[in-house]
Amino acid sequence: MEHRVAQASLFNEKDAVDKGSVFSDPAFSGNKRLPIHRWVPWIAGYSQQFVQDALKRYLPTQGTVLDPFAGVGTTLVEAILSGHHALGFEINPYAALACRTKLNACTLDPQTVRAMLTRFWTFYELASKDSYIPDSTPPPGFKTRGSFYSPKVLHKVLGVQDFIADLEEGLLQDLFRVAFGATMITYSNYSYEPSLGRRSTAGKADIEDFPVGETIAQKLTDMAQDIEWMRGQLNGKHPANEVFPESFFTCKDHLTADSVDVLITSPPYLNNYHYNRNTRPHLYWLGFAEAPRDLKPLEEQNFGKFWQTVRDQECVGLSFELEDPEIQGCLEALRKKHPEKGVYGGNGWANYAASYFNDCYRFSESAHYALKPGGTALVVIGNSILQGIMVPTDRFLGTIAEAAGLELVDIHVPRATRVGNSIIKSDVRVAKAKDAHQLYEAVVELRKP
View 1 (cartoon, rainbow, N blue to C red):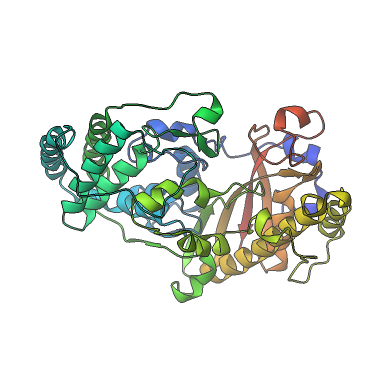
View 2 (tube, helix red, strand yellow):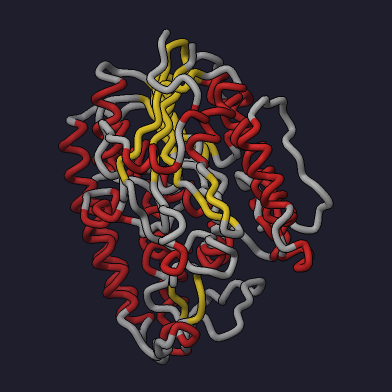
């Protein structure tokens, strides 16, 4: 089969950002207003419209859709709404909870949700009074530099925790847990800038008091409305779905080979964003973690590792055979940058990049295992800038995927300019570096022969 892109290395940075695309901009901000998708704020992802378009183009009849980095479920929700079976992997327990709850909430009767919401409101009016003594306590292992909740807010939050704990375990309790998790940062003394940090550090005042119950009740009201909408969309059908709270690299333990029609995903970018650290409050307050040791496995399973975990190593090289001078040249160029800075110099960042490329290969091998012959993988990924060196992650992924036995069909660039706090020169922000390099977002289209 003739490829529209025979070799990813034929593209340079200008080619990538000038090239047209059959996809619309995958930016996910519009999801905040859409039923089901609006339930949980998430730091990154792609739009519902992108997934809809992809499914119509690549899977016009019923099939199986896989998202190896499911997040809070954009791909999987759209898959079941389109009548497909949905499978996902997600190592973050909070994200996996939100994803599973979204996929299965349609089995709840909206009137049951509204009746429980009425019970919640009756209970909360009592629990928010100063005379109420909550049974719940803050998670003892959760430590922050400043008070996560102010005293008045904490009293209300513990009352909410009492109500949730008293619910029978199951989907309805999970719905309330997701409603709390989705709102809990809103009334805390922390905020995303974009990483989680103290409001005071960002020049914002602490929140002394807040309508906690009203905020959660409004979220649950929206959820009940969305469940009703989803039930109407599905018209009595509920396609099979499963979310595995594990790394995609364990897929052979859970999936049959050659069983997936379309894979749609977006792995963590090469920007060292720490998803697990930024959901640390959710993991503790929802009972997924009791001490730092519980977060350690999430770091070890993270795609591409973190710079902090590999910077001290002498030299991390590629763990697979690859005849590509550009990727090797990129790693060598990084290693030569600022050796006088020790672990903060280029060698640490080269280790980070090499670890990322190694996981790109493992991902490609796993995708090759799961996809049916002729099956398509669409991987949304952004380029990166490390120590002032532009890393065309999309092209490198295409090359690595070919080494793992997949075909690189095309690299689409629906978003030629993106702005964010990606690592530019480790201490230089995007705004200062945009003259030298352009950040973009690509869709790498792969096929299993």
